[in-house]
Image (tube, rainbow over all chains, first blue to last red; front, side):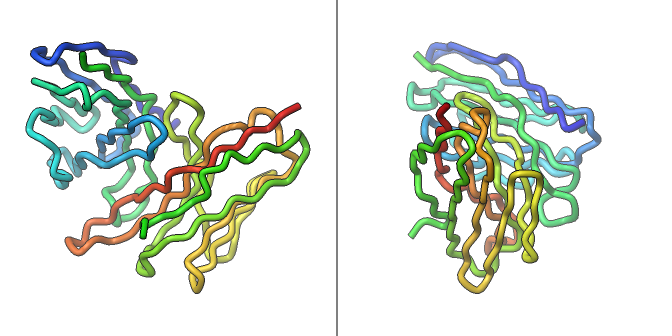
Length: 116
Length: 113
């Protein structure tokens, strides 16, 4: 079973709102990732968590704030977003952190975010 | 030059056709290679890893040429359900030691009846 779940599937928010995206996996994977994907573009890495600790932040603006409450959950807190932040936000997980073994990444279905 | 380059297509083929996609990568230190498939408005799904010796999974065959920094995907006996965007993905090591997936922009395949 290589299932990663994400909620909500769709989210519409105003520029002054605060919202959160959630990601969950029960495969015992030790690394989790957030990606952003704009239409007709490939996914772009935002954050990597290894063993529940933030290991990579790809210079993402502070209006995106990741959180890893436990080994199965990954949140992305959103605040004061801009319309250009509208995109598909993908969560992924891998058994091991990048470069340390079985690090094949499996993606969740994504949250389609629209910022008005 | 992009790190991973693919022909965006679309490739329009009839059912039953054989189609091949190519991908080139710029980082000679790249260590792992994958093909992912992405349907419209869905997440990328791993199709297959690509090994130096080449590997086959049913109708799909992947090849890697490290000397030419070139990866290919061959689909035989195309089905309507193969219509999707195929993403070439390369894992390479950055200066920090972090190994990151780098995605190509994808090649769109349309299989028609």
